Amino acid sequence: MFLSQMQMPYPYPYDRYPTRPGVDPQMMKETTLRTVEPFVKYGLEEAKKTSYEHAMREIAAMSFLVGRGYDPQNAYRTVESWEVEEGRFY
Image 1 (spheres, helix red, strand yellow):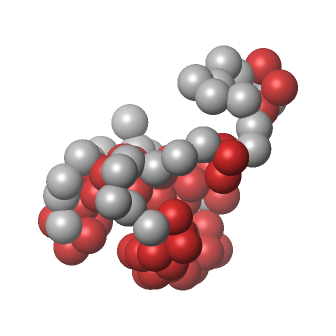
Image 2 (cartoon, one colour; image 1 turned 180 degrees about the horizontal axis):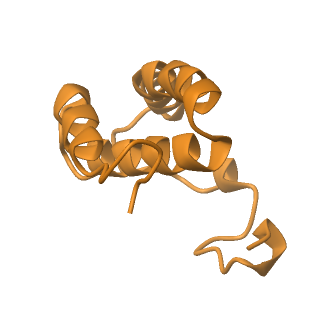
């Protein structure tokens, strides 16, 4: 599905919308990027062994779990535990 086909909850650009009260947008940006950086690096290495589709699916799932309150290590372990066999993630 292309981005133009996706229904987005807010029109782009997102940075025009306020964050939660008391949350500094710059701090939120830095924290978010710092949190996902290890997943990005992992995904680039994983893609060399499997496929970019597989790696992106894993990274998206890990990032989603972090957003749901999992710590990054448990998000990684949880998603890795979902692999049925080498190269399959569903």
